[in-house]
Image (tube, rainbow, N blue to C red; front, side, top):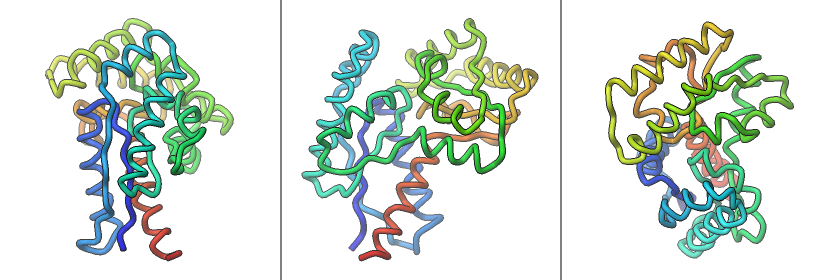
Length: 234
C-alpha cells in the first residue's frame, strides 16, 4: 500500500511546481512505478494574501488547518505546504490538525547546517526575507541569513506577487534576481535559499552564481523519504 501525502496549496503556481518536484523525487528515491498517493487542497489565494497583509496569522493558520482536515478525510497520512510565505502559521495549523505536518524551515536549517555553511542569502517575498521565518531556525545553528538590499527586496517581492504567481516569466526579472544573488555572493554569501515556491521559475543551479537550497524541493524530498520510512514500518 502506497503512502499518502497531503499538499496544502497556497499559490497555485507554486503548488503545481511542487507536485512536479514530488514526482521527480519519487522517481529518484523509490522503486520504479511506486509513486505515493498525492492529494492537493487549496483555499483561495486571495484569502491568504489578505490575511498576511493584515498580519492576521490566526486566519492563515485556520486556512491551513482547514486544508489539512480535508486532506485527512481524503486519506492523507501527513501534510505540508511548499509556500514559504505561510510558514509562520504552520505551528498554528498544527494545533488541532488531524494529521502531522512536515516543516520547511527545519528541513532547510538541517540541510544548510549539514553542509557546513555559515552565511547564506535568501530569495522570497519581503515578508520572508525580512522576518524570522528562516533566520531564527538557521541562527540557532550558527548560520547567518542575509537578505537583499531593501530596493532589491521590494523588486523581488513585486516580481513574485505580480508575475510568478501567475506563471509569467520575464527575462528582465530573471536577470534582476540573478544580479541580486551575485551581489549576495560579493557580500560573502556561500549559498542562497530559494524561499519562494515560484523562485525556480527564474533561478536554477545552471544559471545561479551560488549553490542553491530550494526550500520546496527539500520538502518534497523529505516527504518522499517519509513515505519510504512508513512503508518499512508497515
